Length: 287
Ligand SMILES: [Zn+2]
Image (tube, rainbow, N blue to C red; front, top):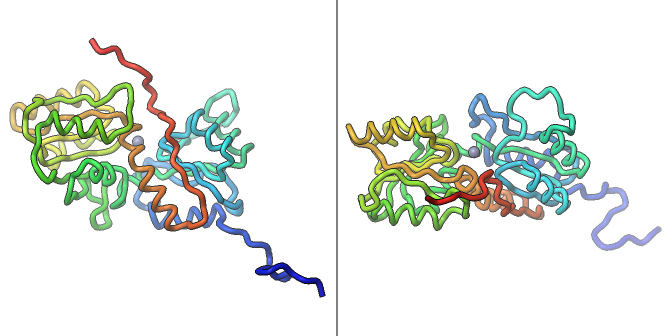
């Protein structure tokens, strides 16, 4: 009889460890796909379900820099908040950047998975994490979903009121640095306490009663007309000051919480957060 090393058994298959399909199942408990908006496309983009997953990199976007980072680091899985493929795709030819990214991920044996609006709506989702970090307490969703305390956006209160200017400073301190910084519409000295926010592009919620009854609404990608209409209506009938922040920065805040949750569910898998800024803007000229 051949001696065996401790802890092994010749008749057992070698340990497989965590597979990509295990990861997908675990993510389904954190961010049920049923919570996604119907236009959304969360889930696995590339990867074989039987492949082992020993390391995961989290990022907001799948772009050249984050795909390079994942493949170069030998990550088995890149998890992004934004789906790389969202609308009908008829080609992944490599002269287009999405095809190029997909091809590099496949050649690098790095799977790609997106957790998007299904990760926005949960109780530890993008807006809930942002609210926590800003000291906004007792929050409820702005647009409630089917499960209790889930839904897009959050509204709650600061422990004590402060000036809009001081609060905007807090927002700037919490967010990672971007070229756009933090833009504010409202009086610097006005007192604020009730805070509504939506990480990501939240202009669709500008007229929501929980937003119009708040002192401040924080979101991203606010364009001229929606912002102006909100401010004009607020001047007439009351409404929130607006704080416009980088879309990437607001959602990047969520990644560390997501990483903690993945580590708890998948012990033994190395989980890290990309600190590459994928906000598209590089600089501003202040006039
Ligand atoms: Zn987003």
